Image (cartoon, rainbow, N blue to C red; front, side):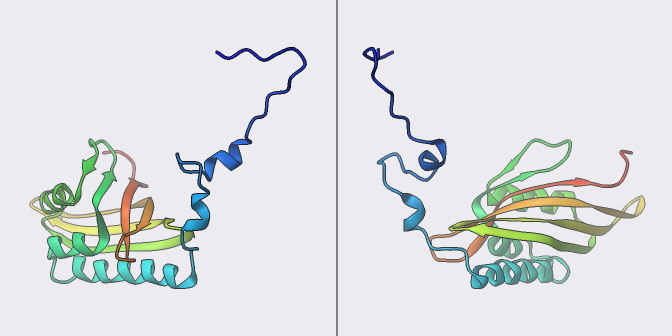
Length: 165
């Protein structure tokens, strides 16, 4: 560890300034686009398009292509993380074969630059061999602006409001 000469003062960069610097020392926050009302609308429109598929054709490949980033991660209760769009497609096909209704309600959407987060509630219904099942709870998701300018869900975490079975 470097020694300071007696009487010399160390010059430290405040953590807030470090958070906005790239490893090269550039101020990367100024290089990113601001989060705009159009970005908010793009996220809301993307989610609505994906929900239309979930409640309609149930084409899970198309749903995931629209909704999730290629490297997206699902963090769901009592499960290991589901990592990557192909694994998410497989998970949805296996976990929700009898899905009859799926709804996401946004309570809060906030963004800065190329990142945004959404907090809200979900409700789903499905038919199983044992009869109908309903679930509702809350979620948080992180969205990233993609290279093509679109917004995709990069991290989705949820947990149910229902008591454990």
